[in-house]
Amino acid sequence: MFKNFSFNFIYFFIDKTIKFINSIFFIVLAFALTFALILSPPDYLQGDVVRIMYVHVPSAWIGLACYSTIAALSVLYFIFKIKNFILINKSIVSIGFLFTCLAVVTGSIWGQPTWGTWWAWDARLTSMIILMFFYLLYISALKFIKPDNLSTKISSIIAIVGAINIPIIKYSVEWWNTLHQPASIKLNGTSSIHSSMLLPLLLMLLVLLLYSGLIFLMKYKTEIIRIKKKNIKRL
Amino acid sequence: MIVNLISMNGLGFYVWLSFGITLASCALVYFKTKKTLRKYEKDFVAELNKLSNSEKKIVLAKSKIANQVFALHKKVV
Image 1 (cartoon, chains in turn yellow, blue):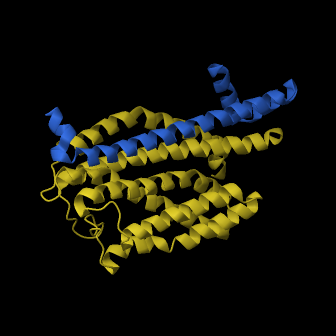
Image 2 (cartoon, each protein chain N blue to C red; image 1 turned 120 degrees about the vertical axis):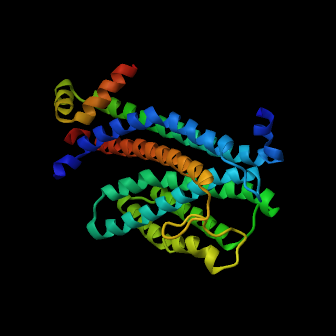
Image 3 (tube, one colour; image 1 turned 90 degrees about the vertical axis):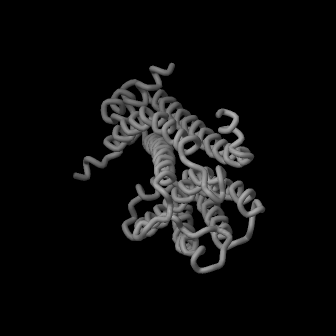
């Protein structure tokens, strides 16, 4: 069974998946943008500016999901010492950082016409900035600390410590009075978002997930080649 | 209709700016990642070419990854 998970197998699986994502990506993107910018209705209160939600919300979800994955894999790395978890983390981290920044920036742009300000130090916004800070710390630890063993350990500790911030982000809108609205979509409960807005939101989420998958696979492939290059004489 | 789509009742600036920043930064990261991958592939082939012919043959026979990267690089060149 483990033979199936050798780098050779993974490499060919990655190649095929990249080709598949490339073949469907622009079709899904065209559909999603048509729904998000043209077909979905404006909000009765916010008007057309609600369309920012279609990039802001999926970005925030992906940013949080990436960090949670990095933290979980860091814990698993300390328990099982499987180096592949660190390779996965290295390939995910830039995606998470990108989408966290996008969530903050698009949120700020959304804030100006709805709240009358680009920025407020409320609990949700501040905790997202702290998440960005943890991403930066993690990336810096991987890049600047030598040797590799030490940088892996320190970056994993940073990821685990930063995981405390994830539930704070999730529940900040319930624990404190914030400008940010509470969640409209609930996995275990009734969502307060209309299906005409939910569909474009899910389509944009699919597009950004496909994009994240593509970047992850390309980065993971780069890591495999880097390792193979290091050990070329042992191949 | 097109004017309405662009102006979005005076809120178009915020909507288009958000979508524009998202798409532009995603495209930028995509091209940077692709460039890095190509660079590593190129470096790998250069390292492979440093080996003697017999060593190279052994590596190419043993490693499917080396084989594929080498073949791809040949196609590009």
